Length: 231
Image (tube, rainbow, N blue to C red):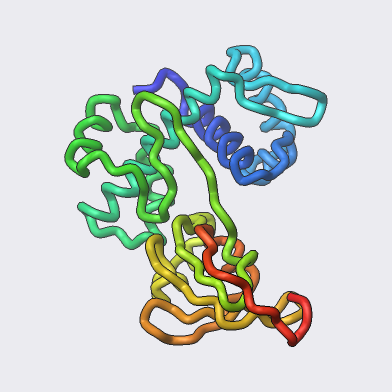
């Protein structure tokens, strides 16, 4: 079991998540991400800096050290393995596993982690398509293209869906917008309007910007010129 406290692990995971989402990692963004006050975040970051888990390139920014990155990857691995276990074995819906794993990840021993990994057949993706860091070796956290970048006439292979909004996850899951699904981009409404997609079952549906920014994957096929105007 990790020697770090649950609070330490939450901060390291939050820094990891913000970094790989391309978001600014500052005291303020961390406080918002974790739902704590800025003074609390400042105090914790000082402690993490003293233990060589984070460093401050300048007065505003925060980043993980090599030691902190390894520690964060251990937490991320446990979290995503637990999500996979809860979804496959306990049949917890994919929009609920994140919150459950947030609680359990801090109590999972190394031995039980290995047993869960073996039981699941050493999965490399969780239910949302997030890559599970290997126990040893390098890890790639690439997000791929957002669905919001797709154009009419193209196809979109869903690889990852952000788990940050459980209500949106439930909605997308009900439509069949899941990792592995192939979507056909039918129309992009102008002026920031929705993207119309043909779903795996053949239905045509409009997905607004908050949803298309959650869905990431691989775009293929030529784009068709949209005479209706810019999106």
